[in-house]
Image 1: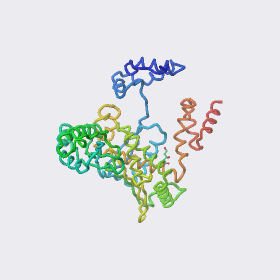
Image 2: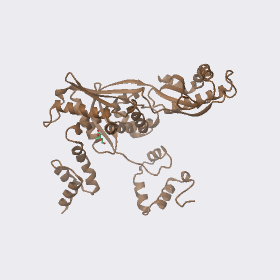
Image 3: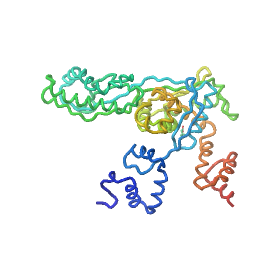
Image 4: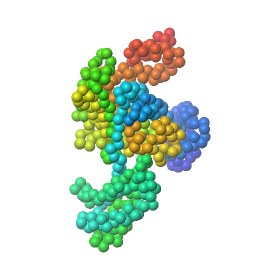
Length: 439
Ligand code: MEV
C-alpha cells in the first residue's frame, strides 16, 4: 500500500484524524494542527453540531457573514444577509439597494414553483404495451407514496403529475417517469427522491403482474431515480424601473448616456456567451451569498441557473434592460428552488438567524429576496463597468486584504485607508505606501 493511504480513516477520532493528516502531509505538523484547532468553536455542543453536518470533519471553514441593508422589495424593507469571501460584493449590493430605494425599490413576482424528478428506466418491447401499463398503474403509483405525501399535502405541496416519456429517439430503450412536484416551503430534495424511489420500486414490481406484457417486457430495468436541478418552472421575476432622467449617476456622465450604455452592456451579454458568463457570474455573486447564508444548496442553484441561461441553445444573459417612453427597466427571470424549512434551516444557528433577519420568509418570499440580491448585484457591476470601470471600487475594497497580507497594524490601516481615499489603489502602490510609512 502507498504510504500516504489509510483505511478506516472515518473511524478515527477527530484528533487522531488530525494527527494522521498532519504527520502524513505536512512538514510543520504542529503548525497544521494549531491552525486546524484555532477554528474549533469553544462551545463544544456547537462544535459537535458542525462536526456532524458532514463526515471526517477536522475543523470549520469560515466565510464572512455580511449584511446589505436598505432593500425595498414590493414595499417591504429588508436587510439581506450575505455569506461570501469576495470583497466589494456586499458593498455593491448595499449601494444598489440604496440607489433603488430612492426610485421605488424592487418589484418581484413568483411565476411558478414546480419541481421535477425522474425515474430513468430501460424497456425493451412494444411502446403501446408500456403506455397501457403506465395508465393502469398510475393510481397505484400515487397510492404507494401516500405515506410520504401525506404531510407534504397538508403543507400545500405534493405530486402534481406523473408522465411517461419516451426518450428512445435519443437513446435506445430509454424511458422516464417524469414527475412534477410542489414542495411548499421545503427545497424538497428528500421528499422528491423518496417518492421517486418508491415509484421505481412499484413500477418495476407491478410490471411482473401486468398481463399485456410479454415475459420479456415484464422486466423493466430501473437505472436511477433522482430529482432534477433544472427547474425552469420554479421561476421568479425581479425588476427595477424609473424614468431615465432619474438615473443620474455622476456629474461625469448624463442619465441618458448612462442608460444607453447600460442597455448596450446588457444587449452584449444577451448575444455574446463570453460576456454572458461573466455577466451572470456577477448575478450569482449576489444570489449565492444569500443562498449560502440561508442554508440552501448553492450548487443546485448554480446548476439550475446556468442551464436556464442556455435554454435557447446558446448561453445568454439572465437579465435584460430596455428604455421605452423614457422609462428605464431592468429585470430578470430566474429559476430558484429554495427552502425555508428542513435541511440546515432548523439546524445551523447562523442560518436560523439569517432567516429571522429576513422576517422568517416562506420559500416563495425567499425566492424573491434572492432574485433581488442577484439583480442588485448585476446592476451594481454593470453600472461600474459602464462608468468608472470595475477596478476603482474593487481595489478600494481589496485594500484591506492587501494591508492584512502585509500585517499592517491598526494605525497603519487608518492612515493608509485615508491616503487611498484620494489615490488609486494597486498592489504596488499599497506596498510602496506601507514601506514609506514604516521607514
Ligand atoms: C466579479 O466578481 C463580477 C463581475 O465580473 C461581474 C460583471 O462583469 O458583470 C464584475
